Length: 452
Image (cartoon, rainbow, N blue to C red; front, top):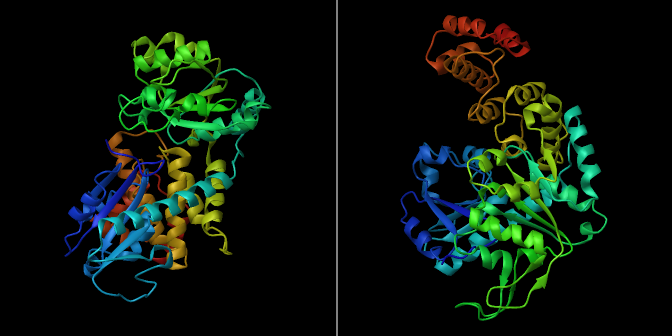
């Protein structure tokens, strides 16, 4: 059975170039819960996601490729890099930025690789945890202020809470607010569990714990999540992913307030407040008999729906984006430019605050890397987003896609119509007609038009 090197899963992207290191990396990490991904293909490199903890291992031979821009790649993805070099390379910061200067020799051992990979991942994870803890909770919009008043009202009660909301809206943050606001449980531990990440067959061991000698490898007794959350809060994220047979066992614990470890007979009393979260429609799952009705009603004593980012509107988008940039660029004196505010306002973020955070980090890394608000590079970041820019009016899917593509290209080329037309493979006249058709107008277009 593979073991987890840390609290989160880890992706390791390998750009091996002329060196044969991908197989060696895969063998070195084979016994850990790590995905090793060959990423020499440029199309793969453009699809790298920051949704999971990620580390890149890159051979210095890749630097010599015309298709590989070190600075652009690091600015675009913002993940730590471990370089593999046959000999000492220049310490030029344009090649090795200080925050990414982790180097392995070409004859690295498996132990050396593992040590450096987990060290780098641990530093990034610790930094992310500190940033998340220090991240201000923005609530400028009216709907968010109303929602937080509900959270405050229900924080100091013992009832179970169900938090509903789309991916990335901040359900765990809400759960922590509920925990911190309770006069008694708030003094205890906050135990967060992703129900969708529990391996098959290990539910009992993870949740109920086990006695010493309960099974092969159980060399010591272990407290499960229920015991760990005693006199605190147990937060079950993605509760809708919990299989039916596990739902029954959870319901029994909630009703009896006792657990029995695997391999033991003694019942252990537990006292915790349960907060659950889901991005799925539990009522529909109940109707489909995929979720127990009795558990649903036990969970939804207090039902909170977190507003998504579009419901919160431009005022929260801008405020959150600026606050996140302030963390990444604490010494940046220049104000965020108005064209970037406009871009953030017009863009839909299906991943909500989580996606907005990732975009802000990429923008921040770009500004730090190039020491400027590079409009073209930042425009490419927004142009790469899956859902694009919100259309002004209701249009067909084809029209929406075309309008979004044109705006993304305009942003990437500083709203210079001739450059944008060349990029799109159309004439300037056709571009202008499409801009009129889709009502793509504004100060940026007018200014760019005067400069053409």
